[in-house]
Image (cartoon, rainbow, N blue to C red):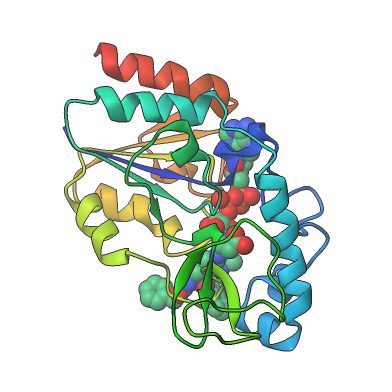
Length: 230
Ligand code: BV8
C-alpha cells in the first residue's frame, strides 16, 4: 500500500515552533507579504534576513516531538511505499530520523546564492554582508525557502507520488496555501483514501474521508500504531 503524508506547521507546534496563522494572523509580528515574498526581499533584505535569522536560531534550540518520531518509526517499519512531503522549512523530520523528506517550500538551514545558484548549509545569521563561498559574491545570499509567488520545489515528483497513493494523510496544515492545499483533491481524484489529522477542523476538512482530531503529539503516534497493527 502506497502512503503519502503531507505535513504543515501544526506538526512542529508542540516542539515550540509557532504556526503561521496565530491569533493575530501576523507572522512573528510581520505581514507575510513583507517578509515571505521576493518583492519584500528586494524592498528590505535586512528585515527579511532578520525574520529568518530569528526563526533559524530558534530552530536550533528546539527538538522533534512524538509526532515527528512516530513518522520516522513508520518509515522504518512500513512495508509499502511511504512518501513524506512537508511544507515546513524546519529540519525536525530529519532530526527525528525520517529519510528522504521532500521540502516543497525549502529549508531554513540552507542558503541560496542569487548570483550563482549555489545552495549551502546555513546555521548562522545571513545578512547583506554575507559572502557566497562558491562564487565569492557579497550581498547575494537568501534563505533557501519558497516565498509567495515562487514555484514550490519537486512538484512533478509530488504529483507522481500522489497519483499512486492508496492513502493520503495531511497532518497539521490549515489547507490555505496552494498548491499544497490542492493535494487532497488530486489524491481523491486518483482513488486514494484521505485522512486529515489536525487540532481543529480546517477549510479542507470536507475534502477528507476521515478526520483525526487532537494534538499531533498524541494523534500521530496513535495513528501510526494503528497503521502498523492493521
Ligand atoms: C505558487 C515557506 C505558482 C516560507 C511558505 C497571489 C500572488 C502570488 C501567489 C498567490 C496569490 N494568490 C494565491 C497565490 C498562491 C499562493 C497561495 O496559496 N497564497 C495563499 C495565501 C492564498 N501560493 C504560492 O505563492 C505558492 N507558489 O503558487 O507558485 C505556481 C504554483 C503551482 C504551479 C505552478 C506555479 C508558494 C507558497 C509557499 C509560500 N511559502 N513557507 C517560510 O516558511 O517562511 S507558506 C507557509 O504557510 C508554509 O510553508 C505553509 O505552506 C503555509 C501554510 O501553513 P500551514 O503549514 O498550513 O500552517 P498554518 O499556520 O496555516 O496552519 C497550522 C495548522 O496546524 C492549523 O490547521 C492548526 O489547526 C494546526 N495545528 C496547530 N497546532 C497543532 C495543529 N495540528 C495538530 N497538532 C497541533 N498541536
